Length: 388
Image (cartoon, rainbow, N blue to C red; front, side, top):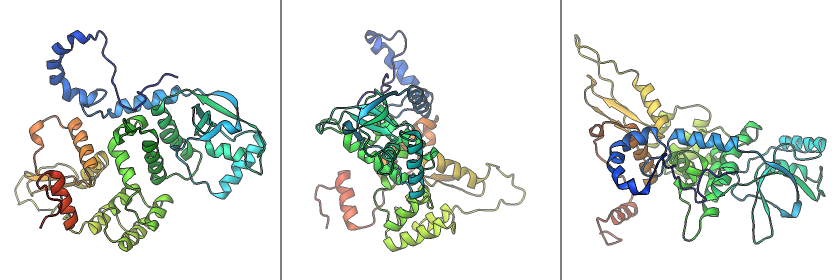
């Protein structure tokens, strides 16, 4: 199977027909003039972030190219891909898988693997369907089977990451298995560590390109691995707490209060905005100012709907604040890390056509002396690690 990404996951758009390296300098001016339009409609922006259309195109092509060749593989040669997403399987579903394996005389569903070479002697790693393989070799099914029927494909690391995480997550969801943003994030973090080399580390952008998803989406999921309390993680894992609410709760400094708010949110006792206000006490809702009598109304639409639309589009709780005449105001998009800020800037760069429309103040908040020292040090405002 032909690979659609380089092995390191970087995104390299194809050259147009008739490309000549000798004409590259002559094309630079036109390239600069067209860069904004290309970022919106083309393959990739200047920071290596593929467009949504390009991600969807590669995703569809990878799925269409998935044509495993069935082979019986010696059991000792098989391992589970360490970066593959692993679902939680309730006992009832596990028993059903085992019963199905007994009926079929093989794994109860597709098991997709690729050939590898390891120091442990394994020659094949399973990307999709490990839970089906386990059901087949369960002690109540065929525990002594020397060979396992697998569907083998040829793919590089980038494509393997897509199949083992993004594709497998959708496959598990369709099969009714328990999946969650936490399981996805854990697999993604393992993939970054597994594929990184001392001289070539996989970055978040590298893996996002491989998974055919936006970098900000992946960054937000990875953030869930740190900062959530056990009960909050449990509610998220069970699907009772949304990923959006879990992300909001990351900013809650009190572990006990985080778990209490998570429990309330999981029961539908508050909206996402209410939860955000409780976690961020300094947040102020936009004030509604009545229009003076006789003054023509400027109908811009429902601000609440627009805020929700922007929040979903940019991946952060967005506030639209306007004065009574809808003439002055601001759009506020909070961020909680440099990675999130980069993601916002990349989206804004693709979305905004009129450059002067974006103006404002970048505010970086700190909560204690340690953070103050670290921020000023890394900004280059101070060379002394400890400020007086």
